[in-house]
Amino acid sequence: ATLMTVYSILHTVQVHLNQSDRHASGGSLGEGSPTQCSWVPWCPQGPLSTVVELLGHQGRYLVVDPDGSVRCGKPASVQQSQFLLELHRSGKWTLQLLDSKKYLESDGEDVFCVSRSPSPYQKWLPQLAMHVHIVLYNPTHQCYARADADLDRVWVDTPVPYLEECGFVLRFRNGMYHLETSSHKFVSRAEKLAKKPSAQTAFNLNLKPKCLAFLSDQDGCVLYPQDKRGRLCLGDNPKEKEEWFVIKRCPQWVSLKTKAKRYVSIICVNQNLSNDTSQDPSCIKHILVIPYSYRNNISMKNLGCNVTPLTCICHPSPPAGPGEAFGVRLANRSFLVLRGRYGYVGSSACHDQGPAHAPLSYHQLSFLPSPAHGRSFWSLSSDGTFRTWGKFALNFCLEIQGSNILAVLAPNGYYMRGDRSGTLLADSEEVTSECLWEF
Image (cartoon, rainbow, N blue to C red; front, side, top):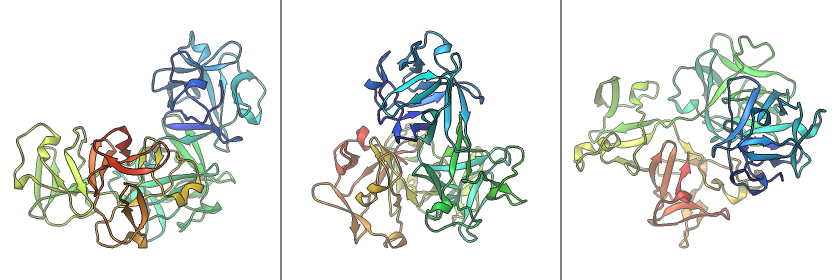
């Protein structure tokens, strides 16, 4: 099997070889070789143990033949597909075929499984393939991490991640991870948050199947909640596996505002009221989760949005009247990191930071007629291309297409899409696969 720049994912993690910065590949063609493959994710099958099988979303396993060659297909027996997964202190993995005790390895060009002797070529660096906007849940404390911008600290003290401060962005650079908060500061080896990424904010991400992970520094210390308040900081004596977090996608909470400028509140399971006149971010009753199971029911603009009709979210209904229109806002997102079919949206100035699968930049959602954090606005050229140095705000319509999926209608009346060449365009009359963005 030839090693290609195609991502293999083990339960929402990409695996690439650290030495050559190339990626293991997954096959998409029946019993074919990974040399003929497209982007295919892999998932460890089995309980939270060290024995895993690598299964792609298209239903094909990573299989080792008796001669040590590696392919994608259906194993004749479990002896061809079961690996012993070993986690190393550096955050890297080794995968040893359970039957033959041989290691999955690469020489930078080919992938094979022929050696029983450990070597650097057998260590794989897992990289998250899920969207980088995440929340961190600690099973030991049964709470989510929350960044405190006032005190420049992170606490593990939130039972439900409805606050914007519970969202983090995992940035991958040079084999290390940087954990960015919603206020665009970074978790640091020092107790306080840092303004910019540096060697002090770089951590190893130690991953296990089912998205369990902990962050450690080069000295072997790990981040875990400490003292009664659950302050997240480095230490070397975690108890009851409290250093482990479950990495989850950042949820899409929204708030609804009626024509009378009152917020929809959840009082109990079967009773909704619309009497509140203020949106208290510390009170969860003002936040409503909408199951985005129907297309084109919600359209949002950055200066007030409508839901028409709201009842269509649950079941079909006649055309809505004026009392059925709601203003809707993303309650826990002041910025979006958009990932499309060909990678994340970023500006050309950021292209030297990493490949297209790495998060390059975020995009501020401005609800005010002024640039966010002193940044310029997007501008739209006549040919449908974008520039990032606009002086005035443009209104874009965000159409929810599914869970954490949206389409963007540009001011020129066309949908925004990603081109295979890496160019962002607003020239599509219909919502195609290239127009869908994960956020």
